[in-house]
Each structure stands twice: as C-alpha cells, then as structure tokens.
Length: 186
Image 1 (cartoon, rainbow, N blue to C red):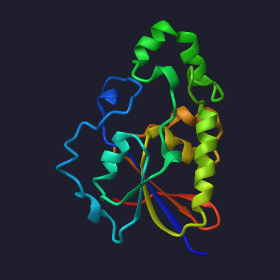
Image 2 (cartoon, rainbow, N blue to C red):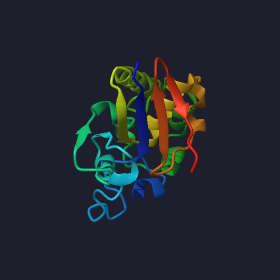
Image 3 (tube, helix red, strand yellow):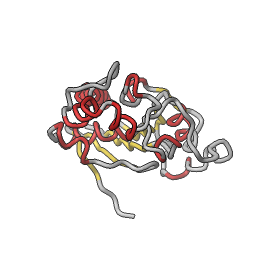
C-alpha cells in the first residue's frame, strides 16, 4: 500500500486574527503578491497543492505555487452572522450563545455550523485522501487543522478548543492503512 502524505498549513496572519475577530473573506497581511512561489522549493518533490476557497488561504497557497486546486471541504468553519464580529463584543452582547458555542461542540453559531459538523466534514474529506497516494499540501484554517487532528488522534470533541494553530503552522499526517500524526525535527 502506498502512503499518502498530507501537509496541512495554516494561512498567513490576517487583521481579524490580530483583533480577535471572526474572519470574513479577507486577505492576509503580508505582501503575498511579491512572494508568490517563494516557498515552492520547500519540499523535495512538488506536492499536489490544495487550498480552501477563502482569499486568505488562496493567497497563502500562492506562496507554494500557482497550480492549486480549490477544495470546498477545506473551507473555514461557518460562524454564520458572527462573521466580522469581535469575540469581546460577543462576550458582552451574546454571552450565553457564545458560551454554548465554546463549550458544546454540537452548538452552532447563529446561522452557522457547529464544531461537531466541522469535524464530520473534515473526517469525511480525510477518508477520501486515503486512496490518493503521494504528497498533498493543503492550505486551510486553524479550525480545519484542529478538526483534522481531532479525527486522526481520535480525541473527544470537548478537546477541540485545547489546540492552538498559529498562522503558517504546519502539521504533517500520513496515511498507510490508518492516519498517523508525524512530528518532524527542525
């Protein structure tokens, strides 16, 4: 059985992250246009490049190459009408709803998707990759990377918010009959 190597990369920093605000479809803060392709040689062989559909993911993926495939399953968690709102404002205006969303993985933001739904979506996507050997590089969002780790590590959903994913963080997963987390040295 051939191995599937999946490298998940979190998109570059956005203004929303600095302001503790739920993102809209916004650009990254770096000058990505002048840096296009600058990270393409990071891997020995050119991986298949996937990106979430949002601008911040596509712009970050462009650092690794121009030939990217947009994958809807990699889209960010849908926070419904909270898009663009600051978490501090929600703590003041909707504390009960925010608390429910943060503490109950089946609770969804108004008009959005729950963490449980996100984790189901990402688990289903990961299962499709098991039959696709080779190296896949996927640029996506912190919540999506958390969901992938939850699935691979078989963690209970209440642990979802115990994982921090920084901008440009990298996680490597391998599939050879089952998914495994691979930690690599510097």
